[in-house]
Length: 262
Length: 301
Ligand SMILES: Cc1cc2nc3c(=O)[nH]c(=O)nc-3n(C[C@H](O)[C@H](O)[C@H](O)COP(=O)(O)OP(=O)(O)OC[C@H]3O[C@@H](n4cnc5c(N)ncnc54)[C@H](O)[C@@H]3O)c2cc1C
Ligand SMILES: Cc1cc2nc3c(=O)[nH]c(=O)nc-3n(C[C@H](O)[C@H](O)[C@H](O)COP(=O)(O)O)c2cc1C
Ligand code: FES
Image (tube, rainbow over all chains, first blue to last red; front, side, top):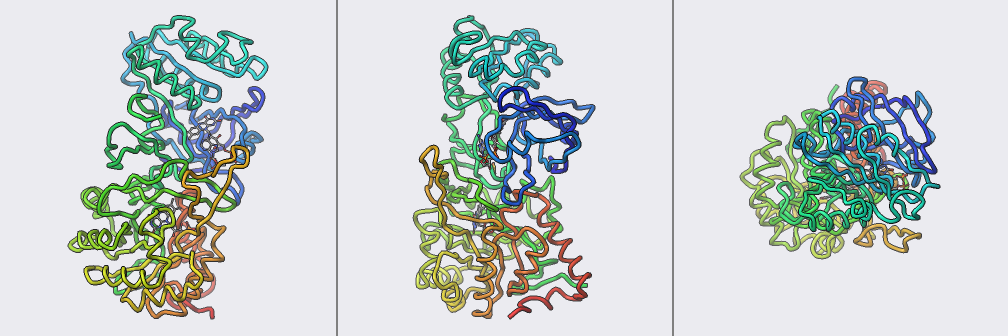
């Protein structure tokens, strides 16, 4: 875990309000899919780091890709990043997806909603490297007009299914609807996206009796487990906190769905 | 050049420490920060039993600062001694344990448990947390309640006692006097200022607790004023904090009358914040020809 200045290597707009930035940073060398970084703004008025998931990793080159939606000040500043610009970044943070436990014959289902899709790209990439053959990615978007960002990139590593809110592409409905419509079979689910989607996936996984790992979000101040700002209620007493609370930034952001109260 | 300060007989290699709750037990930042360089490590508030804390959201950004309503989540004193204190034994720095409770008995129980712990240099009694319904700030805003709890803690404490004061009072001098009269060995201030933020699009409070404690550079001028008033009212040493982000800020608190300073939420922004302060204070001393840091403590006014 380090905090240092990262240099913008490439910056592009993927679709409406969705941007991708590649950084040159030492953090890449120890980063794993599903981990995140805290990105500082350049403003003295905005002092908390912005948690952003690592979307893709080039370990040898020492490069990280962040894909994000513009929401407010920090993401706005980042969307204007130009090659050579420097941002103070801390990471890698959190646990990441448990990919080393995935055997090559495992049927893996990736479920990403909106800006939750990009972090799964690094997962798909890594699974391919691990020789996992059956990987399906179900990606949810608002609609074709808003852009099916990264769907093409996912095709390099997985079978891609699309769900859109407005039915303009793929299944008309949610990612869970798409899984049902296409009768996709899986041994394990890795998911990232908005809370209602994650709740639905938790239910789906319980119904089908499969394990689901979901990546959670919460407001963060430190990102390293010190402030206790980012907790989620847990079924069991947490080994660190000794209450029914886990720190999303440290014990997470990836949790087994049945372990957390969402 | 001397950067060492002494508070209640405890020697600090430099006057810089973290503010409770912003640095965990040091473990969390130990990969990035050399804990041996710090004047002291002040741990997150610990109670006699584990506390769940408040619902989320617990933190939110505000202009040049943040608000928090963690609600003093902590694993309880048993786990703290077994795990956190054991970890800190490996480091060459003072350990100040921040204590919280819902009743006088709760506080005293924790203080007694820590009595035999050699690694604990001082106790800091948090009577000023705005985010818990019972205890906490109730003791910190009423001078009589403050005196009562200070006496009870002092009667059992084996280490020097720092009473941590709330800024949410009309007269900080009265509170400082009450703590001193009841036997406190030192005081620290300021804790966070009670604040509120509303998300106008969702028509909801930004924090689940509705109110939260404001900290960060936004509160610094308030903190400097209070440290000045308190340190010019009492004879016991004052540890100053509130929005410190740089060596210049730290020096400002020392000149206002603080014998040592603590860096709080700025640690979240930059993990090297305290190390930068320590190095920067030395540079400031060189640049302005100060031989001994003690020369500047309370030099203004
Ligand atoms: C572990 C984790 C991973 C994330 N990964 C991504 C990602 O890959 N791509 C992406 O677009 N977004 C991601 N988010 C959400 C992202 O953190 C917010 O969109 C971002 O912080 C907004 O910052 P802002 O300055 O633009 O917005 P502002 O509204 O100006 O931010 C104000 C404050 O609120 C915080 N905040 C606002 N929205 C969120 C949110 N949804 N979650 C947490 N904090 C928030 C900010 O960090 C900041 O402290 C992630 C969040 C978490 C917790
Ligand atoms: C997230 C957070 C948690 C805190 N927890 C505690 C605590 O447990 N005990 C305590 O006495 N003060 C606590 N404080 C208050 C700080 O120690 C400090 O007094 C205050 O934040 C002002 O300093 P700052 O502006 O540098 O942050 C906390 C502050 C923050 C931001
Ligand atoms: S953000 Fe501070 S504990 Fe997770």
